[in-house]
Image (cartoon, rainbow, N blue to C red):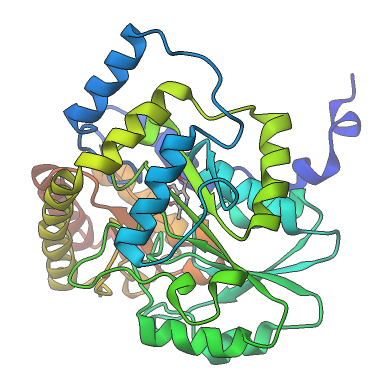
Length: 392
Ligand SMILES: Cc1ncc(COP(=O)(O)O)c(C=O)c1O
């Protein structure tokens, strides 16, 4: 069979994720310290796991409503109201999804017609552009800069808008840079959007993981909720990656269409996870706070240590990544990561895996213990000191 001729040309042209590539390489080597994966090293809080066990024992393991258990949707709406002061109707303005990943997919598919342009802040998480392409849309990268603390500025946004612009993807707190947007900065973005028909997909999966500032959603800004598709989930805040649970909160006409995609492709999110998630929202504030405190200690350690060893490191205010600049080594991001892995057995992710504007940087996850981070940083320091870094 000539599979290349039979398979979809759109999917064949899409490259696999650059995050996975380095992780897979590292997995096949002995003694590697990986700082590659964006997955909490904490356990899901016990109260959540025990709720799942009880759910299994009670044998309530059946399909839920397509949009998710109504009790969970109510609880998510309470949470959004409690945390961000925004109000959604659990019956018409919210859908429970299989992770933030599905939430992003069905939101983009519900909105994009062939040829529509989607503005994507970069560097950013890897899934937006491929999903836009699969939907027949045109991804338009908008590079953010270290000089602007990797924030989206109104000038950058304005200069990318065309009559074909349908959607802005706003991924803050940001993976991989750790940048956040303050209320004042979001006000300026809102100012550019007012009077246009541009919608916003606000990926807020790291909303709980901020250091020193409370997260602000663009939906909180005057007049913005009606054009915002808010995506969030349980993976990062509650250390629940494998439970595969996220959600979309958006105006009812948008949710109505996302429910159809979800209904035909997924049916419903895992029911056990949904019962457990109710418990997470009701009783895990303290667990989340403890995890955030621990991430903060690691964040401060890494920023200081990278600066000390000569890799200038932007001070991130959210998520669990640092994004040091490796230009002083004279190497490309990929060459740096390859040499570091081969010589010192430390796995980090090249910045250009998150868009061309990530070239010259590497992403280091601190969803690892402090001991693990200290060992890795000793090895990175040895790598730089050996002088080999500049010679490759
Ligand atoms: C910015 C961002 N959005 C969404 C996701 C998807 O997370 P999940 O599908 O586990 O909820 C990730 C995962 O790393 C992410 O970094």
